[in-house]
Image (cartoon, rainbow, N blue to C red):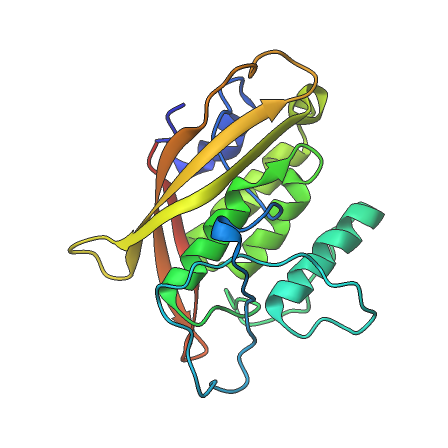
Length: 227
């Protein structure tokens, strides 16, 4: 399915029958099985992760301690929202301040992409709200808009639709500042409809713009699916 469309219409397209391969929120295994975590901003680490690292957010650890990293807080927010069916209102902060970031542009792009493409009909709206909190600028607006639209449509749950995939490649776009092309391989399935029966995995390209926050961390400020 082609994904080239204005981002304002992204959520509507997700609900349509041609949803195959259109990825979204948190959930699912990481690319290549590696793991990494977003980090908070208070102090610069002595060693920065290499820019070529392939990473994903690991599963939530089963401990009672309060989450200390943005990734852990995001996962805790997801779990709480799914349990209470409410999205907690964040403490007021300066406009467009992200919860944290990642140690390199490539790491930020890969984590965001991996979580964007793995979702189920029951987690999509909640996950999009949380993903928006990790982004700034156009990417935050796009995730927030999509979350609001899918939350008011029951088509995904009625069809039992889910999307899964892996991040296959990330590369800087020539001639563009802080813009990366991310290639994903995705597959859409459904438990309550035959619309996706036999559907093969599809390749997709998205342009991701990264922004430096807190002076040394990176997060996503632009997210533009190309097909």
